[in-house]
Length: 154
Image (cartoon, rainbow, N blue to C red; front, side, top):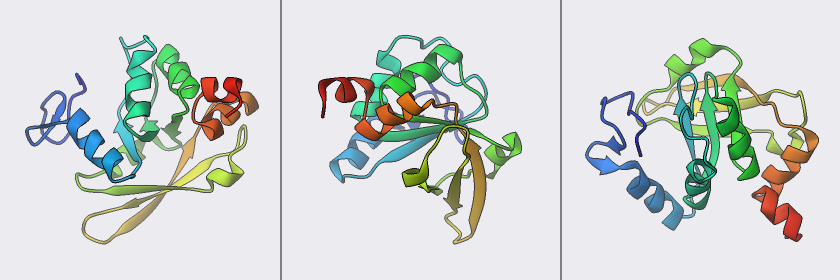
């Protein structure tokens, strides 16, 4: 809720609509969404609820230049895929109204890069490479939707 919108400068909103309301709309449509952020994403939000809320609202991945360490771990526990730009300059490629497709998740493996497509509103598409720090166990958490889901056997 306190995240600054890079396009408007407003905290917690996109064109006067709270981020949470937008996320609820996507969830109601059965559509997952991603966060694109800058450096030290999650700083000051080490509590698990900072990762739990996006999970319950349908967040699939967070793509950033860098993470606050504890928050990155909490995202993993919640089954949200924490990704960093292989080339930090790719952050600048994201524009308002873009859609992101993360590809090859069936082949997600420790140490293996992830690819994504940024589909711009103008019809142009750009491919980018992403990195993750997930262990084999954390990849299982992602596939199960959260560490607790894996523990309970669902």
